[in-house]
Amino acid sequence: MATKRSQSAARKPRTDAQRNRERVLEAAKEAFTRLGANASLDDIAKQAGVGPGTLYRHFPTRDALIEAVYRAEVEKLAAAARDFAEVMPPLEALRAWMLLFVDHIAAKQIIAPALNTLVGGPSKLYEGSRGQIGGAIDTLVKRAIESGEIRKDLDPFDLLRALIGVSYVASSPDWQQSAKRLVDILITGSRPAK
Amino acid sequence: MATKRSQSAARKPRTDAQRNRERVLEAAKEAFTRLGANASLDDIAKQAGVGPGTLYRHFPTRDALIEAVYRAEVEKLAAAARDFAEVMPPLEALRAWMLLFVDHIAAKQIIAPALNTLVGGPSKLYEGSRGQIGGAIDTLVKRAIESGEIRKDLDPFDLLRALIGVSYVASSPDWQQSAKRLVDILITGSRPAK
DNA sequence: ATTCATGCGGAGACTATCTCCGTTTTATCA
DNA sequence: TGATAAAACGGAGATAGTCTCCGCATGAAT
Image (cartoon, rainbow over all chains, first blue to last red; front, side, top):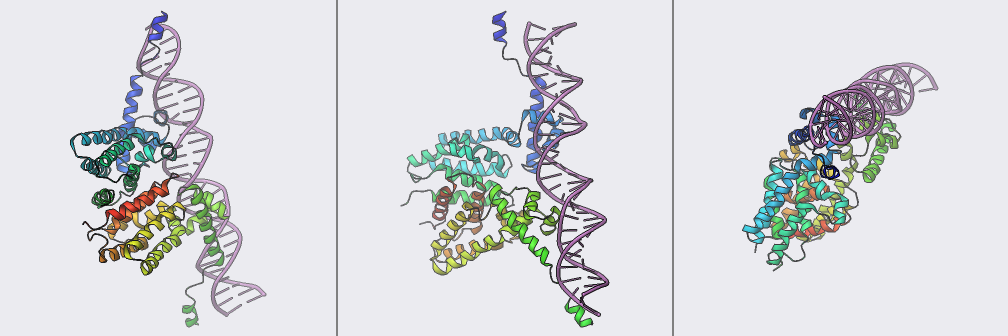
């Protein structure tokens, strides 16, 4: 008896709760895509077919919801860095990754506040906890520094901050082309002095 | 009689209204500095010693208030560009101006949404109405292009967008140094290819 | 089938934005 | 100086969104 109780201490999550959580995430993704990061949370709950209390129970704050909605995209970007590092020369890997970042923002596959929650909050920056995206660019830049293609004193986080910054002004038809030109400027400006 | 009436068609603004408007602007500047761009407008009205209706009458939207509060700072930055252009070589003038921009943000003499209202809105970008700040960087970059110090294909607005972007992530103790390093990267990356 | 813990919905508390109307105040003129 | 008319006022309350909490419902485990 005692053995059985300790084995079943971790009770299986209820299937309705898991289903509701997924429905909220889907509704939120659609709402953020269409209306931006400030879409009404009550409206999202309605679209998901759940009550407001249910939404808040699963995601206590707007930031928590945003983070959850975009976690998969963040992981994709982080994984892409590893993939690029395996098949491309260091500088080209860094460039390709930064351009992929821009494409994700243009396609609204990720939005500025989702990046902010990962890297922009004062406590996170201050503590040096840089999350997966921070780790991704760190690795790519370090690799390019070692290959001699990027100046030794470049702080990868400076580049990341520039990228996240431009995601906040992603509000015009020509934004994507402008952001890609900026990636080129940043890469060129990060080369070693001759 | 008819002559006198046509001369007095434009009635002088009331002194109490002008005074109240100034009080709202002062209270708003202080609140935005202390609490950020989302400070409560009702609280700002209270601090100014006016009713909520009065605040909205003078400034119908939060953006309108922000624009009015920071108009003088925007004009200062625009004027600084002209001043720098008169006393410095083209590339150094551009660099100095971008660093001044960073200093203004660090000192909270201007805030991201104030810049957004001037240059970030889709209609404004789309229409090519670029405001005073846009004009300022336009002039500085064009001058540096003519002197051969900046690549001919650089769009000044790409640099401006990068600057405004980093103003959105101005939330950590080391932000200012990071932004200054970024200015260096942007300038270096904008040089002509050799 | 029963038990118990998890999870639910949504009314209503709370807060900020914003409107609007009766009242007050100021500029102008005679 | 007093009268007039327009400008400007204040703030109660309408509106909308965030968020809580409690009685009820549901699902996992036995």
